[in-house]
Amino acid sequence: MAIDDVFAVIAESTRRQILRSLCESDKAVGELVDELEVSQPTVSKHLKVLREAGLVSMRAQGQKRFYSLVSAPLEDVAAWIAAFGLDRGTAGGHAPEPAAVLVPAGDPPSPAARARTLGQAADRAANRAADFLAHLSKPNLPNLPPLRRRRKS
Image (cartoon, rainbow, N blue to C red; front, side):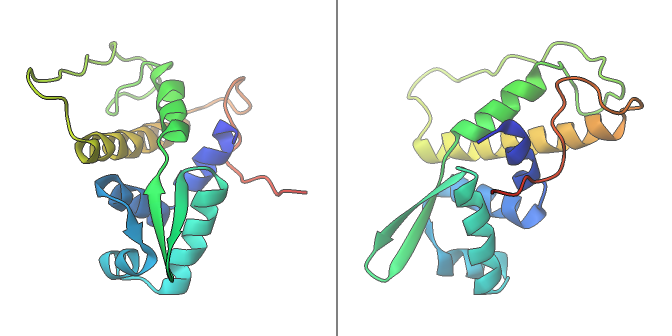
């Protein structure tokens, strides 16, 4: 999956809510419907897009389908944005180096805590990308992905 396709997928707020929810744990479609308070067809439509983008994986257990977060595409987005050294409050792309992430001594964080942190980082990355792209004054800068979704042939 190309990074520009991931940007297009995470641009939709319901999909970001689904990703945030899946950071906590694997969830069945019905759990997502209840949590997000949207219709089952809407959740299923967004899960299909997320699955095709490689952002979630699905496993069947009886009649239920459980979805889980796949972090690799979001890590690619975060790395792409980090290359610009942006700070959320900075316009024009001039910002100090990002602060190091401090990990407390002791036991490593649980998988759910790591997934939640990754989801928060992905949400911040999407917001930073939107802020950055909103402040661009020159169209067609090199290395910037288009913000439209490509149709598969």
